[in-house]
Image 1: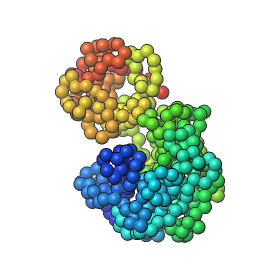
Image 2: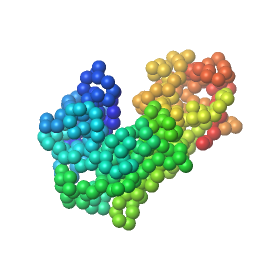
Image 3: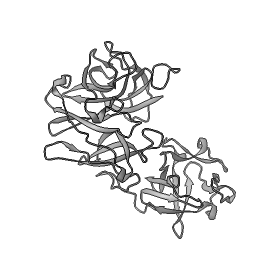
Image 4: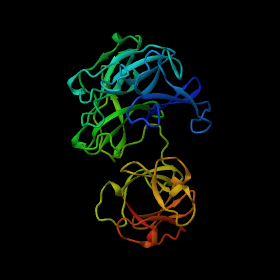
Length: 383
């Protein structure tokens, strides 16, 4: 079981920090530790990844997850959520350590935050630390409570940028959450966030996961969400509230637009040829990946429309699979009349096809020679 991977650029190399159990036969949540992979290539998705080992504090080799890295005045630090001892149960706290190399902490750590206020005691968890530096301050946003509860939310600590992050006295903790769920927009248990800049550097964006129902918590039906944040006159970030899933947003400022003549705008669409109940399993996100090719992802679960095992033969089934970026997950979208479209696999050069023209609910889909007769035509309705 791998948790919370993060990609960081340090010393002109790429590093992935992730959490995992120490032994394959251990239970899912027993003795987690943070581990490190290294890639010297300038491009992180090519080259060779080398396992560097456990990110181990030799004075505090205890349960640890959710590592993130930040640099301040030329020094690298690691934040993580962990236990105080080897009991494997109890309170999760936020710790910081100085790094002597990207995979080796300086022995000794500082506890910066622990569950304290009434709104963060459901599970006794502080986890998922993320850093934002602006306006002369360092902001640490973390997730409070158990992710499986409806109380999962974000809280914030801050210090002045010139202070020592290893000194617990430098940090000030707000006495209220800064981001929490909302039944009004059907976004529950939002948390474990990240921050990123727009391509032109003018916007700060918040990424986070949330569930569409108040019974899901951190189950498999969480969605990744993103939104622009603003800044208050006092220099603090204003995260606002979560957005409803499927809401259409303007892309980050400076992001390349759709290519000229793109057949379809990015967004969420219903693909319905025949179905009795229109729910999330009929809704798909379309993201242009160049020309008129699109990556098509299920709104429910986020998996990608893919030719099975990336095979290119006629009658190959089409299924949902984790995102890989391969050509078997890219589809040429062809516009027909009356709002109908066809999809052709980039890798197979075969069309998305309703097997044998079967209109029954739950029928199979395959790729087949493109004819764009009705078993290969699908109405798209923008959500």
